[in-house]
Image 1 (tube, rainbow, N blue to C red):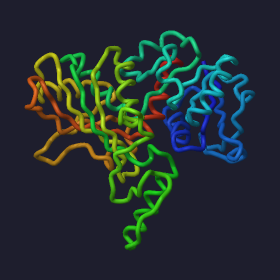
Image 2: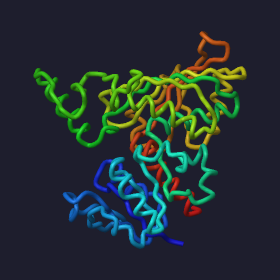
Image 3: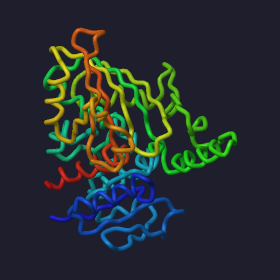
Image 4: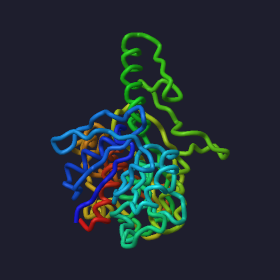
Length: 334
């Protein structure tokens, strides 16, 4: 069986990556329709050696569509994905619009893919936040083996997570700084070149940012149990790939060799952890990869059953487009 697929938000960073991965993984699509805003309509995008003409995203564009891969922003998703569902399509949404909706499954296929056995009630499946996806890929096998009790995470997130304009801003503010000029920009809260910004998304009443809240509430929904988790999310001057320093406390005794063995067998995870050879994951090495890489695995001596680890993944691939396409593959029985 083949499918008519619509990529909503096709001209953005994640949208382009969705098209790239659909082609790379040879998804069984008999037709792919590229949808974007009115100002992008008429443009062209490469796909399977041909060019897709970008169409304006509107309700009627979903007539005859089987599957929607959406990454056009939460406002657009709220407006258009119910329209797609009414026309019979199933949507995989990369935005935050439906993630915490009780009737919308929040899915990482390697972790809770079993929920895809039935069509979702609202015709929508939510793709988790990028920093959450790589985190749960590492946490799930450790929970199964040792039982998670508590998680603390500090993230070091690349500018591509804030979109193409933020990538451009890192280039420009870096040029300014290296030229001896005062860096200026208006995409991120402060200049990002040679800087770290402990703010991703808006601040909430409790002092957390929305990005930190997303990790706190999304991980338990995906893992299927109430997991105490706290995060500090930081934007750093890397173009691609997010890094995370994570501390876990487990119910059962845990040690680095046992954790390495468990993680080495986990789907989607690659262990890169050889301190003597200075082998550990970095954002530069991991950008463009489909692996969630884990290293710096070591004991946390401050608690009885504690472990520290370092997790890196490409936020546009693992943290967004690849996860969405894997969901689509499960739906298609690939």
